[in-house]
Every structure is written in structure tokens, then in C-alpha cells.
Amino acid sequence: MLSAEENQRLTRVGPGTPMGELMRRYWHPIAAASEFDDYATKPVRLMGEDLVLYRDRSGTYGLVDRHCPHRRADLSYGFVEDCGLRCSYHGWLFDEIGNCLHQPYEDVVSPESRFKERIHLKAYPVEEKAGLLWVYLGPQPAPLVPTWEPFTWDNGFVQIVFSEIPCNWLQCQENSIDPVHFEWLHANWSKVLQGTSGPYAATHLRLAFDEFEYGYVYRRITEDTDETNPLWTTGRVCLWPNALFTGSHFEWRVPVDDENTLSVNWAFARVPTDQEPYKQDRIPYWHSPIKDEKTGRWITSHIMNQDFVAWVGQGVNSDRTQEHLGRSDRGVTLIRKQFVRDMNSVAEGRDPKGLIRDPELNHCVELPIIGREKYKDGITREELLRHRAQNAELIPGANVDFPWQVGQPDEVRKAYAEAMGL
Ligand code: FES
Ligand SMILES: [Fe+2]
Image (cartoon, rainbow, N blue to C red; front, side, top):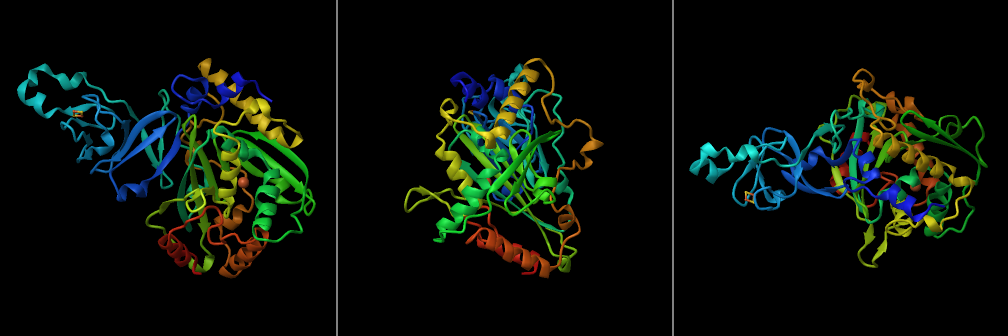
């Protein structure tokens, strides 16, 4: 149980707040590069700041203030040129570091006043990696955008899925270190939702939580497993500071503001060895709904949708003064303490946990991965089909093509099936 003050301190991410300052030390994925094949500007809100992400005609990305410094017009309605973003109200032009390059009328009538040199638009760095656009809102020198090991794998079909979650980011991240929920929120609830009343999934007998350089690992033994099972020997990863990593997919919980979170799912599917070599030309992206418009209720059919139900159900900002933590919640307590240590580190001018600054190390950052060989070396189509059948058994009714989130567009499903040779 936390005090109301501790709860606030851990969850608020606006500029100048301790957690906001901490989260600004990390790169955050906020969009897919392929989105900018469809439009050039995108309004985004991140940690309480209203911004515009754009790609200009030379392919340079920028993340700048939503409002033009002239008279505050909305720059997401600006238009891009060969270099930079031009405000559609009076035509001021800006580059990706926030310089004002052109003030059409001022440049004609009083070029000698050099007015534009005194204008600066707030701008943050953007980098593309693994089909995602990463942004950094913290002080320089920025750390590196992590090259997590799966970003280096070949022969994969990747898709990026976004959902907007109307609650604070921290309760989403606390779910990343909560092994027991899998048994109930996913396995057992799915059975009930499918109309079967049992038998329930094997119950958890033992848990372990270990810190490592880039987060925490949680390990479990259930009634049907023992100490030789990879879920115990390797475990799953709560990736610092705001992601879950399961081996084939990442889920980032990106703070939009104190009351909203962007869920970013980067999902990798290794094509069967029969399909090699496979090269994906474009990583597709799509938005997954979370509410059933007919009933006004949250969607419950897919794994991450079930997670979303749990998160939003805790309230916009979970009232941690009212909770009762047990032994299953040791991981939750561990990460809260780590966040407090990290906020203190930042306040004292030190780096928080898990930043990567060494380019040598960042060629490929290894993480604990169950079944690494399966992803790196691949399996045959026959093995894949067997695996899918087992999955369908584990989570009844789960869409085995994409069990994570509802609403996969047909063209993505088709491209996936083609890549996988299904
Ligand atoms: S408000 Fe943007 S150019 Fe005038
Ligand atoms: Fe979950």
C-alpha cells in the first residue's frame, strides 16, 4: 500500500515532475515509420506535451511543438517541404531542430531585422529503428536507442499495433511483472468466455523475481511444470522502464499524459525454414480498438485486450492507498522501489537504470529469451502448425494468427499468411 503522495509521485509524468524527468531519460517508440507513407504529419501527445511528428520530403523526421511560435496555429495541419515543416497559417518554415528557416512576409519587408534567428520551435530528436519511430525528450547527451536482440533477427514478419488506453501508464507496466495474472486473466477467463467451465489451467506454485541490467525477470512454476521448465530457468522479462518482452513480442506502455497510455506492440513471427529467405519490405502498422461500440464495453476476446480490461478497470489512476499486496505482488513492489531509486538518481544528476551509451554494446543487446534458437534458426512449417494447434488449446478461441489484439486488417493477415506459407 502506498500513501497518496507516493502514488502521485510514481505516476505523474508531466514536465518537471520526478517521474516525468525520469521517463524523459529514455527513448520511447511512438509511431511506425510506415505511417508516414500514408501522411506526413501526425499530432502526438507524450508525457503531457502536445507535439507533432512529421517526415519531410527528404525523409528527415522531426518532433516539434504542436503550436507555431508565430500565433500558435496547429502545426499538425502544416505541410512538409524538402526540408522541414511549414505552418499553413502564414507560412513560417521550421527544420527538425527547431530553427525557423523562412518567414515569407518578414523576409521580404525587413530581411535586415533577422527576426527568424530569434525564433525557436521546441524540437526533440527522432530515430527510426525496427520499423518504429523513437523519440527522446530528455537532456543531452541522449543515450542510444536500444538495439534489442530481436531487432537484429532475419526472416521475420513484423507488425506494429497501437491501442490508446484511457488510464495511467504505471498500472499498465505493473502488469509486466505479474505472473499469476496469466493463469486467471488469460487462461481461465478465456475458458469461461468461451463457455467452458473447466478444468482451470494449472495453478502457480512458486514465483521468483530477479533484477538484471535491463529490467526484471519473473519466473514461475505451475502445477504442470518443474524447475527444468524454461519459464523457471529463463523466465520472462519486465523491460525497463515501461515494457514487457516475451521473446517474440514487445509491449511498450508509453505515457501520453497522466491519464492515458499508448500501447505499442511490436510482434515478430519467424517464417518457417521452408519459406527462407524472407525479406519484409515494409513493416505494417494498425490500430486495435479496445471498446465494443455496440455494447460500450471493453473487448475481451484477445490476450492484450484482456490486459487492457484489467488496467482500465483499476481506474484512471489506480488508487494504491486502497490495495492489499500479497506474495504474488513482490515484483510490483520491486519495480516501484526501483522507480523511486531511479527518480533519486536523476535528481542527483546520475543515470537511471538500463540506459545504453556504448555503441559497441548496442550492436545487439541480448535479453533472456525462451526458445531463442526457434526464432534465430527457425522451425519447419510442419512444426509451426503443430505449435499453433497447441496454442489454440492453451487459450481457447484465441485467434491463432494474431492472438494478441483484436481487429487485424485483412491485408496484414494476408501478408502474414503469405510470408509464413500458410
Ligand atoms: S501561426 Fe504559424 S505562421 Fe503564423
Ligand atoms: Fe497479460
